[in-house]
Image (cartoon, rainbow, N blue to C red; front, side, top):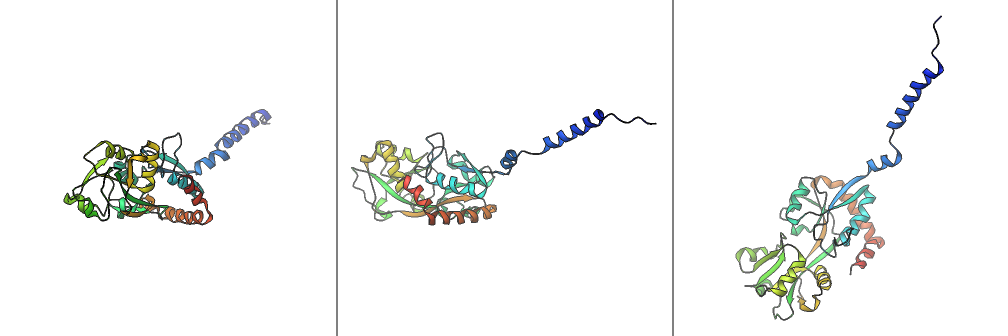
Length: 259
């Protein structure tokens, strides 16, 4: 008569099998973490205050706050990336970045990208030294002058003047440096910046009393998210949420914090 296996011998492999199966199951927290997609958002090394502010431990600013509000609702975790302007387009194209704030008109090849609806509008104006008598009514008023601009930005209305040499352009690494060049460099006549950005920087740098800005606006553009073309579904979902926060007052509350 064959001997029966002991109960202890039967229990041991069953217990091991149960423990292995249980260990293979993901915990609820790990499963939720795995399902959370990452949205790599460019805030640039120097920011673009008050739209992007990178002075503190955590980014801030109008664009950051809007993205941080909407994107988690679409199932993504937002991670900031600080990428210099000259590398941004290539890194979006190659997938190292998912989005960057941008106006269509500032982009050299906008047809290569997808853009959301405008989050806010930027108004480009000229800033002059307070002692200067220079005025901006038309671009012809700036003939023979040197304009300080941020590096790598495209200005459609000014490009023909820059190319012909009628207006000279001097590019600097960021908007903050523009005003220091304009204040201390006799060879510069004006700086070109968004109205809100200029006011913010002059206040932060203690330079508000040294400059005045043009009454006329050079241009007014929508400030959007720039994405790869294959992010169409995301862009449509983002636009729907953007319309909601515009209607329910959440966007106005964000704007009020920076104005």
